[in-house]
Image (cartoon, rainbow, N blue to C red):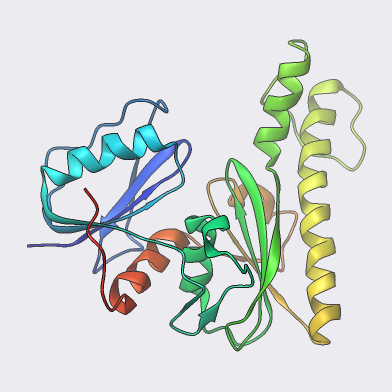
Length: 242
């Protein structure tokens, strides 16, 4: 029987087998309902969730009927060689924690950036010490928020320029540059804090769209699932959740 890893986010559910976390599949969800293909079943399910509690309960109910054991990942102040900066681990999203866990150890100071519904930025030192982070709207969320203010402002489309000459391109350009400018400023701040060069690790559903504006960044995939695989291996006494 096979163990599976599940990453339940705000818009999608991703999953992979524990022995191949980089080979993931995904399905979108409505925020209320979610459905897994019938072939997804096995011995143990390992789950990371940042979605609303009601959707988490729906997923866990499905998994409990397909797997002998179901484990939910929890943020820990220290795990493997990662030590997070939050005094209260419960305040940190499990997706950020697992993304950092997937990256350690790093050879140089690293800015770990997730581009999803939110834009999250975390600093990580080579010894595994997390120095803290930021949470901001992603470009897509910025566009959605502007659309909420005025229906005349479309929530997608447009190209990115230094200075746009139409509204659609101006929206795309403003949101992309806002995100990349924040990333670049925190990249410089991490280098100043560590007094050495740092790398930027970019991941998440919107990462590839920003990568062209951050050519020195390293594009990664499935960091949450990869970190969940590390959590599975290093959890000395995993807890079962129903």
